[in-house]
Length: 267
Image (tube, rainbow, N blue to C red; front, side, top):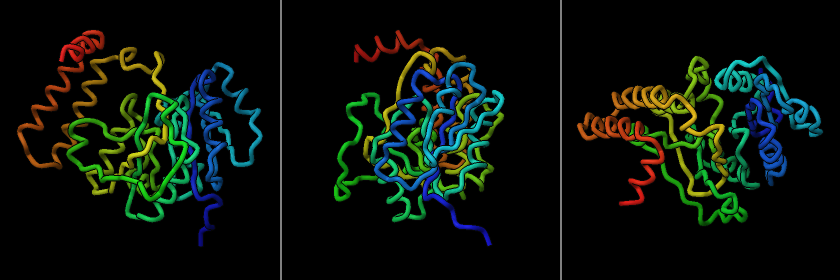
């Protein structure tokens, strides 16, 4: 007979050379109004001051694990091996959580136990993070399979995931170099797992040059996204308009962002 989990929620952050933003991320977790959680932080072979900062943390809920640099997918899977809770809350190392995030998500997941993945709105203005929570006004909706054909509708950094769902699909695909979260969502949604998105700003998604789409191999990124869209499309209604949408999104993504902004500004 297995022992019950020590904590109700496991928060998981992976980081590689993230000292610039990591302290604010960690602080946002340790200041949660919901306190029954463990915080697993995987350092993916950082060469800056990240590990030094992490070793200075003095909180019994924090576990720091350092591995040789192996990539995000590997680091996430290592982190999952050390999570003891039924619910896994992901937070990227450059993002910030509302102080109510774990309280809102844990209570929702226990109230609606069929939910495999619970996400929220990710905002780009930190001042809009949720400060006051009114359970009576909570709005949410299920994310249908067709949404995954159009784009990745789930902000990875806002996701709380049932560990059993992750284990069913053997966790993240650690062979991927991009879109590891999109790949995971698709493997779950085609197996009829329930995705819910709540209409609350629970995570501040930081946008900066180091993780900008424009700094990556754009063609490779777009091609991988297109392949994933076709993969999920095979499980949806065979609407010709969806094929057109996939083709259009690929071609549109090839346009440099400077030109895209000008085009949008003229609409």
